[in-house]
Amino acid sequence: MRKDKVTVTKIVGMKSEGERIAALTAYDFITAKILDEVGIDLILVGDSVGTVVAGYDTTLPVTMDQMIYHTAIVSRAVRRALVVGDMPFMSYQASVEDALRNAGRFLKDGGAEAVKLEGGAEFAETVRRIVASGIPVMGHLGLTPQSVHKFGGYKLQAVTEEAAQKLLRDAKALEEAGVFSIVLEKVPQEIARRVTLEVSVPTIGIGAGPYCDGQILVTHDMLGLFEKFRPKFVRRYAELGKLAKEACSNYLTDVKGGRFPSEEESYSAYESDREDS
Image (cartoon, rainbow, N blue to C red; front, side):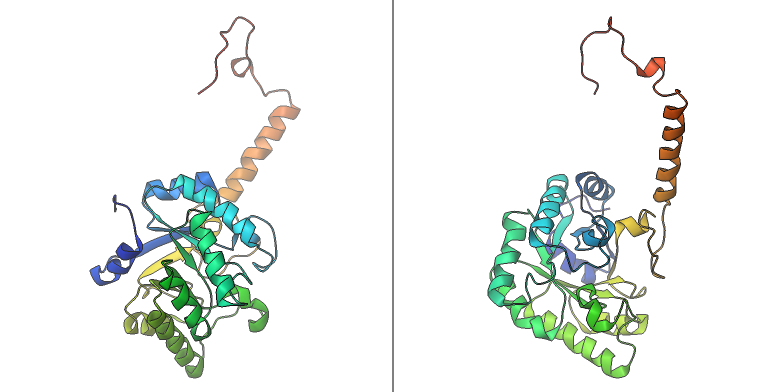
């Protein structure tokens, strides 16, 4: 496990060193602190906050102010991992100027060290300008959730040779524009392997098979906290949602039955006035 600070340069170097990149999402202080302490390399403050925290059906309603709020919280908790802020819908699509301004807010107000945006060759100039301003950019291809209505749902992407070729062209365009890594979401593993072999920057897969240079999952999915739907590519490393329901149910039963709090959990007038640590 790396103990030194993870930077963009180190993420790029992990590809040539053959070290897999482990990434997860975080939106709050406690989760970010846990991920950082166990050694996660990259923490993405994703616009997935809209679905797993705010309860929206898509990521589209998430605003810049909401993203900056959550990014600042995560940044305060992290000491080692690279923190990447996810640019929300319409924060970069309208103009390069908007993109520059909003990307800058992630670093200036949110404490992030890089930003992520969705899209391929059509956003190459935007990426180039952001990178030229000193802000590292992570790309995102394949299933890009901000285009969910264009795709007609959360469908597998790049399933035809024509679509696969476009994905490869987009990846190369992003590489040339200066991204330090590319997320590949919900594409066939064979296509992800081709992209990984043909670009010099790391690929980080989510539903893209084992051949990427790294992997990322939404932490709420991985921990079993988000139960609305479960994509095929999600491995549940815990079922915290079930454990939380059980704990809350036990609390309810104890309160209703007068079993909580106990004498041991109550204060006496004779106790010294002190704060619990």
